[in-house]
Image (cartoon, rainbow, N blue to C red; front, side, top):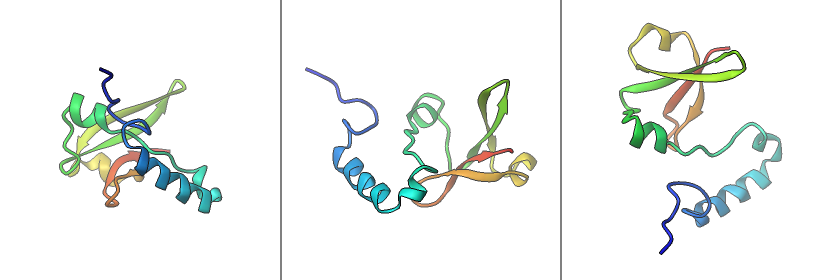
Length: 95
């Protein structure tokens, strides 16, 4: 018996069909966004996005993300670049 993948169109085909329709309606915005699986953060790293947020920066051609408490000073000086379905910011990006 095959196991369903943790995330993606094979796991949630109806959801991705609807996302495809939205991207088709807004092609100029579609190039700015993607669907991101949060399994690594929530299951493997046990990140609680109600209490923590990822802060990403570019270093030597790699995107590095570290997680901080939402009250930390570093969080106040960056802008959001990843949201959950209820518009909660889960990742900040330093430019």
